[in-house]
Image 1: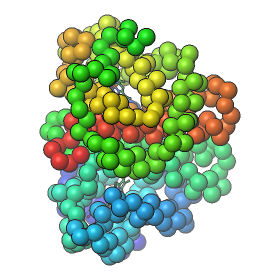
Image 2: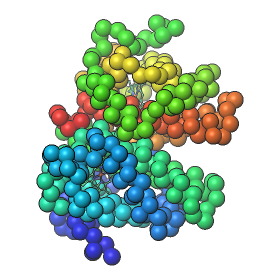
Image 3: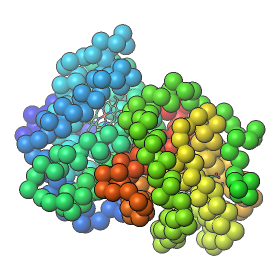
Image 4: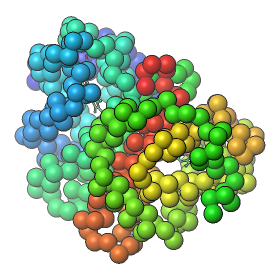
Length: 195
Length: 195
Ligand code: HEM
Ligand code: HEM
């Protein structure tokens, strides 16, 4: 199924090696209090979200479309949104939700985080979909997105078969996983040695 | 009272000018969905937390002390924790909780964010307290701290006079305020133009 997602290269040779090794990644997981219980709750979240992925993506895409300072990164330098670009990235964004809900996170996963990071920067933005869009997303918005990407997930997690406490735990696990990933994605943005 | 806090220089001339102007800051606030309602809930949170600040700080300091990869930044290069440094920063950390709960955030506040950011980096770490500690905190841990600094606040917000929904809203407002600030603090870490 993932073969059908254009530009999704998880596990392929073209993906760079992560600058973070497993011991460093483990220290990072400790810092966000990420445990096996979170992995369990992410897998539960994956079940609950299955079938709702399109609705989640609608929510996020509407948020982006509503803000000129965000939609510009899916647009031509003249400010015209590129539908094909939005559609193609949307497929990969959906797969990212599934991958986030499919721990444990191994080295291939870690390497693909570096690829995703680079695709937001001068280094690789626009290349995968061969589009003529603004060529860089400022780091401030990646960091800021931690809030909407976390908060908007709660109602969808409530739509499943789980009750109050389990929903809270799935949501915490999601929050940790988002912080973990955006943190990894800061690497190519940060000055040498300061990450 | 804030006059008594050693090294707390909010509003003083020595504080740098923020690289972010108000229009840019407003776009950032939009991105984390920060509204006047959040400001209201942060002020409520400030009331609830008043009297609990030491307990909050105990929680955070225990978390740091429990992790060698974190306590090293309050230690000598040889790994000996510097009590005076921990104590002095603790006072300013307490004041930061009060300041975070005292919006609206104006230009002086924005400038002090830049000062706080720099105090975590090569540029200013250790200077304020004239200590001989490790001279830089990697950005990854600032970003990762968004999770513990947000999650650990919830029980303290529940200890006040407010009920379920108001607690949720105070907690969301806190979450947004933390993301907003850590995002601003990334500026000196990020490569020129990429922030
Ligand atoms: C929490 C923050 C964010 C998350 C979780 C996220 C997630 C993703 C994912 C999963 C992809 C596809 C990766 C792949 O190719 O397999 C992607 C690509 C993309 N994202 Fe983000 N993103 C975030 C922040 C942002 C922001 C703030 C913007 C700006 C509006 C943005 C715009 C884009 C664009 C334009 C692409 C396509 C890049 C390319 O040309 O390949 N993202 N993002
Ligand atoms: C959400 C993330 C963080 C928050 C909210 C935060 C908050 C603060 C505040 C408010 C101060 C005092 C600012 C002032 O001087 O007025 C400070 C300083 C300091 N923080 Fe952080 N911090 C964060 C991440 C970290 C991390 C990950 C570490 C590493 C263990 C750390 C270690 C320190 C140290 C050593 C100082 C003293 C810096 C100096 O020499 O002036 N902080 N922090």
